[in-house]
Length: 146
Image (cartoon, rainbow, N blue to C red; front, side, top):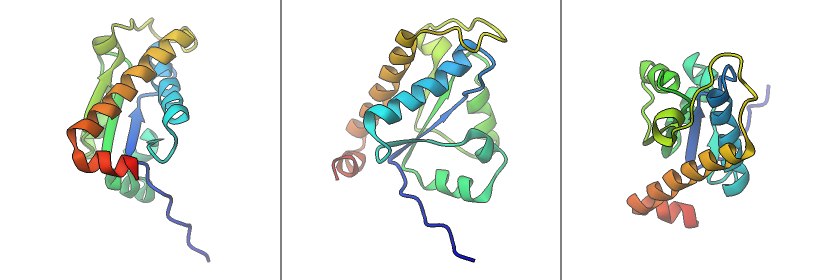
């Protein structure tokens, strides 16, 4: 049986709530995908939150090798951050849409109640965090330019 090729790791991994159960949960995932579209998969990649939480060996090992992790939560419940702490994953940066950006959670079953402007605003905030990481860590900046 052939072994799977080792994927090229992005410099930054995004672990987003992406629950889809509310507007802010959906926004976390949509914005994460927008950031990958803008910056490219060499710079940033979306990591599988369910796989990491289930401790799928390959996914967990890959996430632990990524240089910087950003966790994105949609609301004050901070589900992604709390669940990741339970499996020993710490983030370099954290963004909470409700607390940091003032985007109100509309409640359950509001999965599609967000605008493209909100997606872009969250993506802009994530890009700013990624750029801050590049400025704060000279080796990160060098890797980014390579």
